[in-house]
Length: 245
Image (cartoon, rainbow, N blue to C red; front, side, top):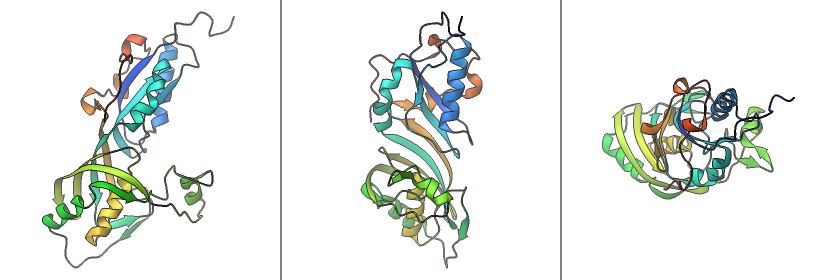
């Protein structure tokens, strides 16, 4: 008799997770799948996520299980909110703290008024060039694979929507902003371009996603809070849920 004989019915539902630092989005999917299987779910139960977070980012990651994976596109197109920490003293090859830094020397730090004015310039539908270390494809190849091999990466600017940028704190070279934006916006690129507009450096030093559509960080569960054996009752009902944004 196979190990999957007489499994429990395939569970279906959602989890709003608070992805921890240095874990990939797929790491969280694997953890959820393993704990569902521990409780008797089929080994091939579908588990997906709506919108990848980089390993250096934390925050809201919507996990979909079973039939709820049908909501993937709806979740991904929902508006998102981020809390971003930006280092204005340097640029980076990856536009974040993982890459090689190039220090930028300036005569005088920009004023708070100049920072607020520069942020306002990026609100609306703008043309944004993705980072070279991104999942964008060039002739069928991932840009980050090409960049890691030392190949030249040329990505074309594309339109993205930024609904709001609010300066939360500023003491040069550290800038903290909240960003409300649409699908496909790279906050790393925003950090880089904001630094360019200010005549400073610009790289992302920290990122926390606090909203995806209607799902917020207040709803999120940590990996540590999940039971070792997860049942359908541990998931949010997915019927009639249509994330908005």
